[in-house]
Length: 210
View 1 (cartoon, rainbow, N blue to C red):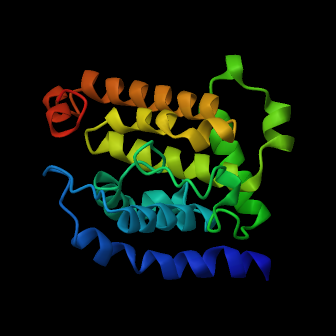
View 2 (cartoon, rainbow, N blue to C red):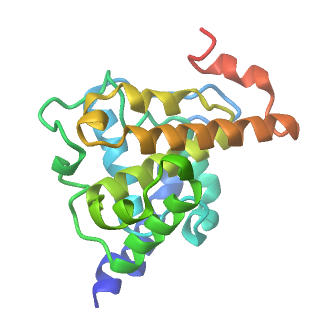
């Protein structure tokens, strides 16, 4: 019953909203339309948190199934954390009401296993991560990983560093994890460039070289 409430039934309903949302955003071949209005930014954040609460994750079956729509949405998604969008009423990631919503044990394990495969092993304490990192923080990291890897596939790796400018990331003790995700995304971008899958000039569409 819990799986049906927090898992596949809800995920199927969420899937139906992805095509119309993607359709109103620029295609990945065009410059992104990243909002700066705080209300819109928060809506984007909550949408990605909800996706991850219901089983969407980096390289997961749900993500692969809906890849085309998720890619287009991620292309115009603001960073899920940054100094400019910092919510001063939520000084810790754990205080976000969407991140605190329930999710199944299966989904939580999916995110933990996914994150463990990409986090920097040199600065990564597996036991601490398994037992001390809260569920809201796990969902946040999973959402950040999902958005930024999709953004890399759309041709931009510049925004993954914005997460480190958000004071709530430091307050929540997530700076090392976010740094590892940024490193993973940059490495993924370089691999795309080396294979000729992304033109380096695409960075001109981002803020990295301007």
